Image (cartoon, rainbow, N blue to C red; front, side, top):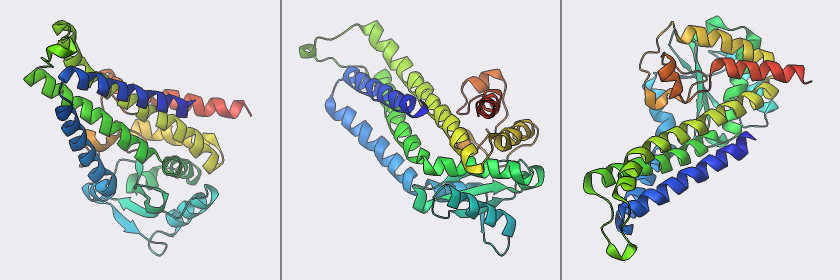
Length: 280
């Protein structure tokens, strides 16, 4: 269901893009905007892992200097039938983790020192399972596609708003008020759809990750602790552009911020995990 919803939302983003491109008019301008967006996201897809790891000061660890963490990742990767990812550690008090890399053969799992101190071994396995599920489900690729289309929509919306829509009489013109509303709300709609895709992938990673770890309650217990700590302990160097990567949002915020969050409500995620144990 989450996979089907993801492809539906990607299709909706594409329709938004085509509609806004038609409003803007010239095919040349639409093509230029799309090429720019694809170019930016192509660079992000190939190099974002190095950028984000450096941004948070993540250091690669080996079996020699982090034997328990390394062996856990290796065991869970084997269980998920994935190549062994690189393992990184961040000197951050906030307990959190993320996965990155353009495909399973170039993946990395990064955890904070805070999460190693706070979670039990079972809870940590739930978190690692979740991150490996992102790798297995190729969520980074899906997120990049969504970002490409949403970025192009936003770019076209700004172009249309500041330079005006099509004035080609051969195309029949159009309702100027409807056009103005499209210019304003299409980028907002694209952002909301992109966030919905991210939330769908989080639910899927929770479900798949629980299977990798062996027990949904491992991840449910971890999420309870992580959600509380994320609101109390700041993440140094954190920003909105990378917050979607983490298992829980590293940025604290109220109900309005949660509305525009790339992460589903923690209570809902925990509820789904706990309910899955009752179905078996």
